[in-house]
Length: 231
Image (cartoon, rainbow, N blue to C red; front, side, top):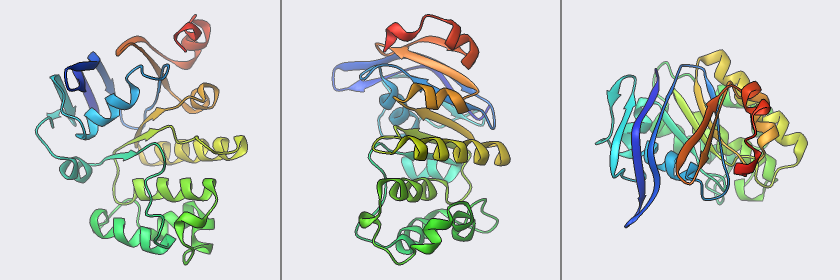
């Protein structure tokens, strides 16, 4: 298992948002983490990334507990988060964005360096000198995804990556995520309100409701079940 959660609970102040969440992910597996707004999806990602300290439970990466590790240490292990709203530096150029993040995450033998990113997203090579904040929403999201995978990611977590994108761009981006995961045995956790698009690339579907997992199975089982009342 790459990533395991054991009875993880977390929240904000005295308010518990997720309660006893348990799941385990294999290398290369794509998990669609679904549920209504406020179900606890983003809180789960933040707890995994170390942005939020759990109140109970364990987080394991490659079988070792990482509960006490900081965000930078988790990034070094291969955990990556693409946050909702695009994690880019809007006032820097595309090349400068990649240089800043690459200086921290790209070492010898890295899975993805700047050249690999440009090969994956040729439009970014064409717009190297363009200020990131002036690009289209789709191009900004390509850059954000590129920043998230620079280095050697093992588990990529994406929080609502389709927000603000045209349907054709959503489909294209999700297929690129799937190709990258399958070709590099990279695990992905996809939090997404576009349920149909997420389920097209997912190997597994987990549905959360009121901070707990209420469904865990493959997409076919999810489609056959009566899970829509959780949205």
